[in-house]
Every structure is written in structure tokens, then in C-alpha cells.
Amino acid sequence: MRTAILYSEKMREYDLGHVLTGERYERFMRLFREKLGDNPVFEIVEPDYATEADLKLVHTQEYIRRVERYESRDPHDTPLSPPVVRAAKLMAGAGKLGGELVQSAAFSKAIVIGGGVQHAGRDYEKGFGVFSDVGICAENLMQNYGLERILILDADAHAGDGIYAIFRRDPRVLFVSIHQDPRTLYPGPSYSNPIGEAEGQGYSVNVPLLPGTGDLAYKHVLDNVFVPVAEEFQPEVIIMVDGSDTHFMDRITQMGLTLKGIYMIADKVRQTADNVCQGKVIEFAGSGYDPEGTLFPRGWLASICGLAGIEFDLEEPYPLPVGHRADYAASETRRIVQAVRSTLSPYWKCFASS
Ligand SMILES: [Zn+2]
Image (cartoon, rainbow, N blue to C red):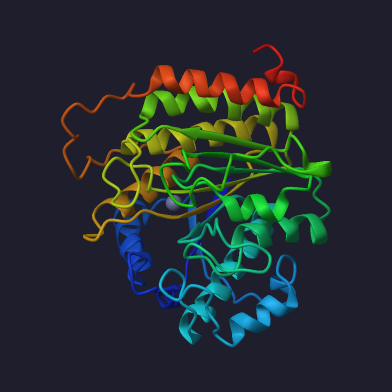
């Protein structure tokens, strides 16, 4: 089955004037074309801008109006301007289209280049995100295609507090977030790794990891949290949010993954999707912040190769830090996983054996 790469040159307008630069999308595509451009598995698909009706799948009318007046809550973090708002609508349109392509028979996977809004909610922008491409993807599949079970795996280094806020009461969406402990990283300790609310209680599975956590510890989390809960939930599709900010050289986070670790996560998602949902995955690959732009394109490529099940042979662009270990934080991670399973064992049979 084929994999759609959702990309448009117009994405370059998503430039926030800080670590999130507009040239990152094309920079990634240059590496993609060089390494995978002639691989027949992939097809580049140009997304459209989200319409007002698309945005309203998630966002309130008042919020959409405020964004269209360019009234930023936090102009340093998430500035609003005509190009940024246009590009945010393009990203939202890409998220919607990604879901629709995977629903069609033509593609089993869709990858939204540069996407993965994690912090914006139904009526606010936050943390570089304006319109929730992830939320619009999921809501569109539920409201317009009748899907009843969607699993969102957020493997970005930051906790996805906005995605949580959007779906916290919705038992149709199982939200699994593996992230650097928010007591040590944005969005901060106010995100206390909640388990969902009301009907959605038990449908949010947060795994807060220590800074520096490495490849083997991540594998332990996937094998003991993500895979069993995915098999029990039996989603009709998996949405994956990642990028490369879990890499040891990312400049705004402190996690310890190598490119092989990033590949491993996506590879695990592919195998799980093959088992539970005919291989259907929509990936939002957008994070990763290094000023030289050396690392993140390789991180995104590692993830895409893992998801597509093709070999990845790029070298690490930077030497491993002194003392780096793949099993860093392994024993602490086992304890964290045990605590997560125990907290959620009333809701999931697969966690009851902990
Ligand atoms: Zn992040």
C-alpha cells in the first residue's frame, strides 16, 4: 500500500520568526527527494487550505474570528499574521486530507510534513500552534466518516496538552502521550498527566519520562503501554504525532533518543497498525529544533522510513555525547511504566496484570 506525503511549497509561510522557521519544510523535502524520491511507495500530494467548516470541526467561531483579526494571546510564542494564519489553515487542511486519503483505498499511510499541533485548544492558540491539525483530522473522521475508535500516539518530546484538552471527555479517542516530564519542560507542571474526564476517563494515557531517556527505555514504554492498550482498544486508525525533538541533540528539549530510536518508534507503530487497523496511520512529523537544520530532516526521515517499513541508513550528524547510553533511565522508566499501568488498570484489562 502507498504512502502519501502531504506537502506544499506554501507551507513556508508557517514561519514564526524564532526556532520554527519557514524554510524547514523545503529543507526536509530536499533530503526526502534525494533519499526516497524514486521510491514508488511514496506519492507527494498537495493539500488545500482548510475551510471555515473544517476549522469548526474543532474550533469555536469566536476563536476563528479572533485569529482572523490577528489578535495574538502570546505574540512572542505564537504570533498571528496573514501568512501565519494562511499557513495554519493549510496545515489544518493537510491534516484533514491525510485522514481522508487513509480512509480511501488508495493509501494506507499519510504523512503531514511539518504538522502536529499539540498545544492549541478549541478556543486558543498556544506553543507554536494555531489550528489543531490533529484534532481536525480526528474529528473529520468521526463526524464525516463514522469512525468510532481513533488512537492518537503523541511521541513528541512535549506533552500534548492541547490534544488532551480537545478530547479529554471523548471515549472514541484514546490519547497516548509519551513525553519528557512536564515538570522539566514546556508545557510545564500544570499538565499533571491526567487520565481523562467524565466519559473519557481512562482514555488518556500519559507517560512522563526523565530527561535523557534513551532508546531502550522508550522501547520498554512502547512494548508495555502503547502496544497492549492499542491491541485492547482496536482503533480503526492510528494518528501519530512526532518529529525529532526527542533526539539527544535537539536544542529545546533534553531527551536522549538516537535516529535509530526515532526509527524504532515509527517501526513499532507500523507493526501495531498492521495488527489492529490494516496498517492505517496518519503521521504528523513536525518537531525538531536545531538552528543549522542538520538534525531535524534526518529525524523526520528516520520516522518516515520506520512507518513505511523501509531501511534507514543515515549516520548520526553529531557524535554521541560523552556518557550517552541507550539504556539511560531504563530502571526509572520501568517504575514509571508500572505506575502508569497501575493507575489505568481499572480501565484496561491489559494493565490489570501489573
Ligand atoms: Zn515538541
